[in-house]
Length: 253
Image 1: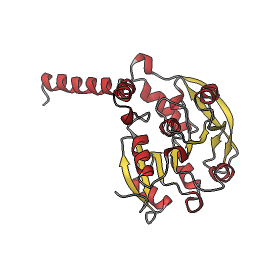
Image 2: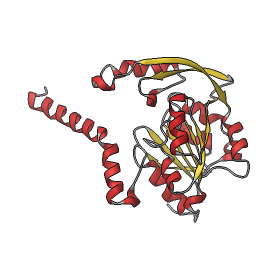
Image 3: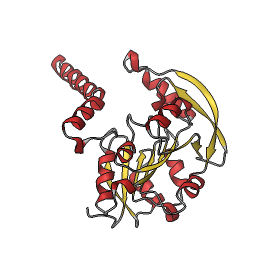
Image 4: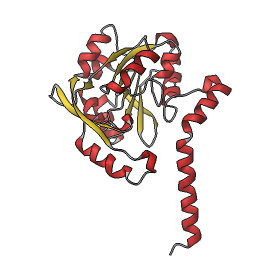
C-alpha cells in the first residue's frame, strides 16, 4: 500500500516534469545565446542530430534541402528552421492558413505549399483546427483523443475545436517530383498528427529517399523499417514522440 509520502513524491516528480517540459523552449533559447552552436528549435534536438549527420557526409550547411510535412510554426518546435538559419532551403507543407503569413515572413527562401499531404486516395479532406494549431489533425479519432486528453491538462492548455475545414490534399510524390526533381531532399520531417504512417507509406523511397527521416511515432520501429527499407535505413534516435532514421552507410555511426 502506497503511503501519503509516496503520493507526495509522485506529485512532485510529475510537477517537475511539467515545469521542465513547459520551460524547454526558453531553456533552448538561453542555451543558444550562451552557446550558439548548441541551438536547437526541435522538441528534443532532432534538428541538431540531423544536421550533424548530414554534415558528416561533407555536405555544406547552405546546400541542405528539406521537405517539412505538417510544418506548423516556422520557428517554434520546427524540425527544419535550424537548417534555414544555416542557409538551407526547402518546402514547407502546411494546410492551416493561420501559419501562412508567419511562414512567409520568417522563411522567405522556403516554398509554402498550402495544402495537406494525401494519406489515401482522396484529393481533399476535412481538417480539425484546434485552439493550438499544434494539435490540428485530419483524423477524427485523433481529434476526439486530443479533446478527451486535454480535459486533464492545465486550464490554459485545454483544447477546443476552432473549426473544421475541407482542404486540398496533394500526393507526397507529386510534391517531391515538382520541387526535388534534381535529387531527393537531404531531410524529410513528417508531423501529420494522426496520419503520419499513412503519409510515410505513400512516399517512393527508391526515388526520393532522404538521408535523414524524422517522423512522429505512430507504429512500431519495425513497421517503419518495413516501409522505408531496413536494408537502406537504420534507427538513429527516438523520443517519446518521434523516430529518426538515417540512410545506411551515409555517415559514420
